[in-house]
Image (cartoon, rainbow, N blue to C red; front, side, top):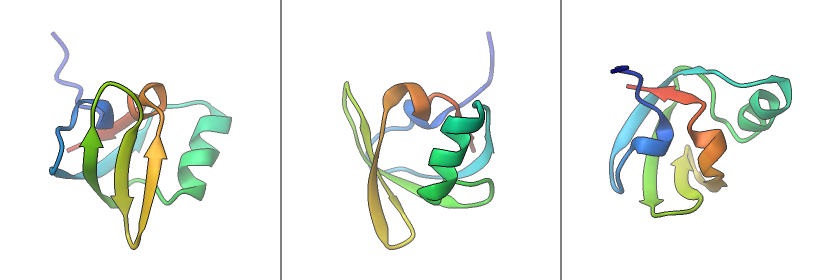
Length: 74
C-alpha cells in the first residue's frame, strides 16, 4: 500500500504543507495561479464528497477532487 498522502484525503479543519504537484502542465499552472505551490501551507475548510474548499494565504478557493488528488501533502 502506498504512503502517498494527497490534498483530497485531508479531513476538514486540518492544515498541511504542499510537498509537490504531480500533475500535467495545465493543472499545475492552474494550481500555481491559485497559490498552491510546494512549500505553502493549505488549510482544508471543507472536504465532503465533491470539490474541496481550502484556504491559501488570505484567499479561499475550490479545488476539484481529481486535481486535489494530484497535490502531495505532509
